[in-house]
Length: 336
Image (cartoon, rainbow, N blue to C red; front, side, top):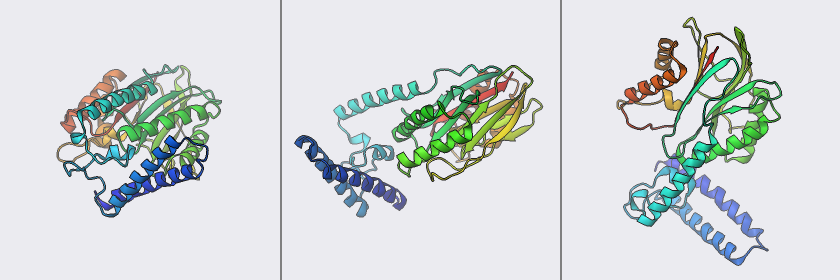
């Protein structure tokens, strides 16, 4: 494990050590069994800190290989890799991951929302059993505009999925009273900075769509460090909606600029996570935004569901892999 990883896990362990120590110092009325359990966990964490210092942290006790990083994120005291755990532990882990996967998929919309004046289609695939991509269709806020969100948690697997579920809960509560994207994302960033460890970051794009069957509509958006969505005009012109602020979770005083675009009948806006553009082939080349934009321009007239399948097929063919290395999400919005 490289020094940067060791430092990351050292900070994570210290954080948990401080939390457990604080609990023990205030545990006068707790049951003796609970106190013993916390003391045992505290001992394991301090042992793990010793292994960080001697640089043996993350090494499997049995095969001497590497313990999976995503497991260490969830359970930093684990000392055995997946290949070496017992059959009983494998069965329990499989059951837990299956349940976590069901919960994760249930948190995402089960189908694209119907928004007056627009056609929508979505394709989302997790690289692991539990993913860190998030998208949602928020009820119209006090500005009476439908809102679409797409986001990407740092990392993959269960830790990213847990962060995603926290973000979803906070965003849905805040969205009940806050309509404007700028105010909504500013409050979300403040909540994230105050409630989630600073090692966890989140990129997010939020758009508020003016509804109605007319030739032109206004879209107001905030891009918090997310992949720039691609706007494909009916004429074939391409525009990229660049970030208007930094990623969420870095600093609670970050400011986010709100921008507006006019979308005309026949124009199409495509939102995506980096699992689309950063998909690599065996040479290490990325699919990239340029290739995606060219594909969208060429397939502009396709049905949106057909377009989603075409993008997925092109990315899979380019990477020449059977499974994704990162979570994959794309949303297409066409003005009717």
